[in-house]
Image (cartoon, rainbow, N blue to C red; front, side, top):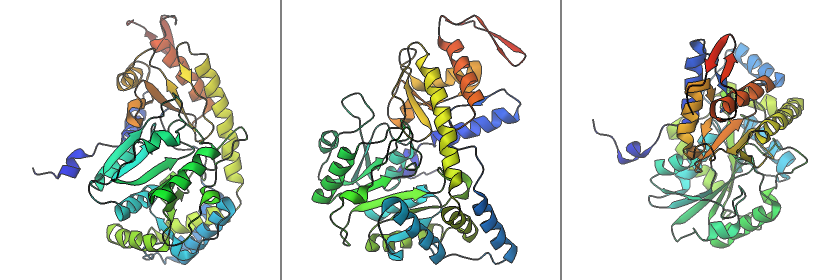
Length: 405
């Protein structure tokens, strides 16, 4: 069988594979705990459900414009004004089947083969694969000061004549780091001066804790013409807990949005009218569900941080946003893939290997589940890898005896 060079270069999504593993084990009745997930457990806002139901009852479920309905664009414009204090026009907006598609068509619209895209480590697992799908070259930049916060000088050292775009994800998946105002101001200015596209992946920007604030990149933009290189990516999956609805969007200059719409039109056509109705309902409806989710996540975050801080040998920089913690387990095993598989095999706890995010020795642990799962999951992990743990552990009525060192 003949497979393309790009096809052979693309790896399976590690996060989606983990979800599949969880579903299989759960269906078998295994006492599995999922600490690797990226999906809030709260229900979709009632306004979203009401809106989609009302439209479904009409029976008029037809094709949508490739870049989103006018009603959807108005909701995104309203959202942008509320959260970014920037008035944009419908021609600056494209609605897509998830923020992932919005990002993908943006990359396809700007990249040529051999162009380079810079992003900071730790990074979302799909960035390098999406860049490779465009025939371009992914370039990961790891902060040199041992933190999860990038510095402009770290990025500048990796910029070449082939650099076409820089992706910034704050709050960051997987670390939960919220990048400081000074860095956002510097990177906006740098990209404008160098003519490099700046892609802001803001999918978690409403999920921040402890009084932290996400910096608005529009505050530092000088060029609002059609030469603007700023692209904002967002969607309803995380803050509205609507992962399965698959509606996201991009804000960019009108010429770029037109090209993105052309590409999307040949890929999938417009996003589902039904799902756009739900997204409109969520954005225009009562926003209390976001506050409720944020409160729940902040409580879960506190518990997870406490549990990890009591875990000998584990180093953690507490997350300020998202619903992930990125903990250093290298004292136990520098091979995070092996450690993650070991925890799954021995105590049925799913974690995400840090290697998938560009930093081996770490595990990404999610706190978007329940507190009971967080506490029991960390307890099982301690028992599996801490040499000072008791020799026996009960999972339900099943007694496990540790027969390894």
